[in-house]
Image 1 (tube, rainbow, N blue to C red):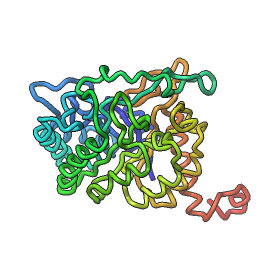
Image 2 (image 1 turned 60 degrees about the horizontal axis):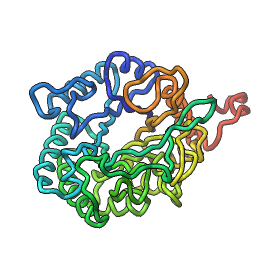
Image 3 (image 1 turned 180 degrees about the vertical axis):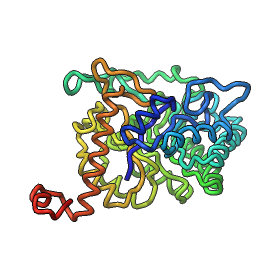
Image 4 (image 1 turned 90 degrees about the vertical axis):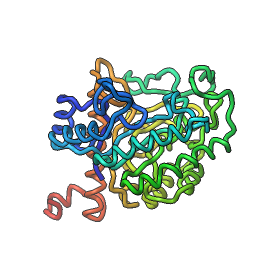
Length: 355
């Protein structure tokens, strides 16, 4: 088990910080649907999308700092021009071919994981709330969240849930054979928040059973999950520990968004990594016992007073580094417990039974 974090930039500062803190595995925000050079905010010049050469250059730059690209993360479903894939529109086949060409370029350059979203109405939150020490965490209260679909270009006036499942099935059956052939594992992030409907769009990936259904569409290690533990722990009535155990043993978790919330839907807020309702030490042990070998990334870290921006996920430098230190400590703790057959006690260190 290893650390990672998600970044949108691979500039010198981010790369040096990653190397110095021992966060050697990076998730890069890029991929199909994006219109900037991978690992930067620089717009593309004279071409429609990033290509094979762009991904080769990205990998080479990251490796020059002694770091590794664990995978890329992005959500073409957020861009209205790709809505025909989600909703079964007239340009669906044309757009799927465009996506597959992009995935092929990533894979042939050396990208081995692609996590993406199936959320045309994006992630929903209400106003942030004050948490420990006056920091702020993102929050969601379904009773006050407007559901006006006019905010989302490309979203039809109404959609039938079963019809949307058929559109998702069509996509999975097109993507997965290519992913197998090219050696790039692909997986979908859950609906966040995992509500039955948002903006008149059914939330398909909102439960344990929904993910079992997704994975049954095309049984393959290349049809997997971008496992946002935070969102899975928001799912009403579900057991987060049982879901982790099940999906790890099925070899379906590509990488983990390791974050915490205070409760499940319909009202919740995100917390510091060690103050939510999920026992993070316990769940790290579940990953270990089930045989997980992938990475854990910080996610949606609280907003601290006077913190400085860090290019990528929610949260500034201090907030994200706190989470990374906590993740590193938990990985070492559960790994050593396994090595020594249980918790290491001071008496074992003093008598020399543990070095």
